Length: 316
Image 1 (tube, rainbow, N blue to C red):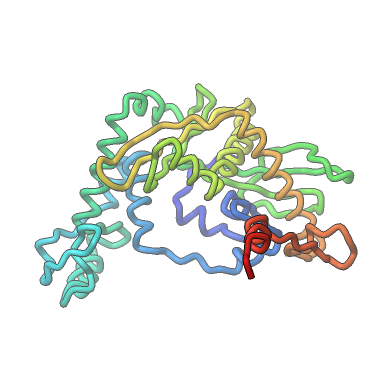
Image 2: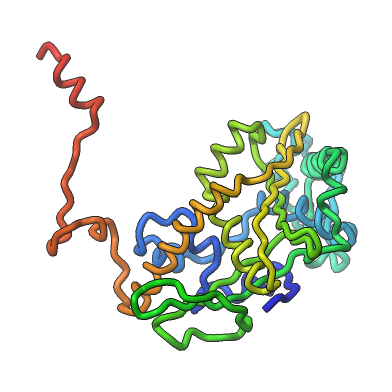
């Protein structure tokens, strides 16, 4: 199923039978999955910067109507903090800030401080000045902020048999299946590629590659391509990332994720998905004991080489 959804609509379906990239990324064991599911979703103020930037890049009309800024001059205390913004903690500042957000005309809008408004504006300009941006992000020719829903089906031997579209209100009805969904930033309908917008501290080739590895963005990319392929009925094998730095000079870089890396990542996320399927069937979510090759869940502890060298070279 392909359906255009707001973040609120998509997040309302969090948990239950549906698995999303955020459920798969960063897992060490199935036990992490359960722990993460039990944590309540908490909206942080700094999320607003990323949300506003996404809106500006992908839904400019929504940005114009739904994102506003609070002028610095209206703060009674003009003390600036490290990031250049006026500190909300200054005397009387929080009261006027909250009063501004509570105005009827500002209801449900993202309110940015002047410093953050200027930051998002500069990031927008940098992204749009990138020579390839307008040629790749053709919003009128693709699915924007769209959700894709699929059913993964294994055979009794534990091998993945097929992936097919599923309805967003479907339920898991068999121990051989898993329901998986994702929300893609942009998917081109004609050129068969998906595109994601990311903000980062460092978007240099080395720095951003490290962030991708640490946050497992590659798993998200592979899942997006898999679900889009199943729903669109044609293979999507290219994933592009627009990465923009959150500090001057607000570098904007577009990266094409290596196809070989996506293939390698696919085997990892399918393995995790299959292990979660078995865990959900048995209602047993193992920790690191799953790595043991004995009935006791006993692991061998191997001391690190640096520690052994330290012992050998010690004079006492």
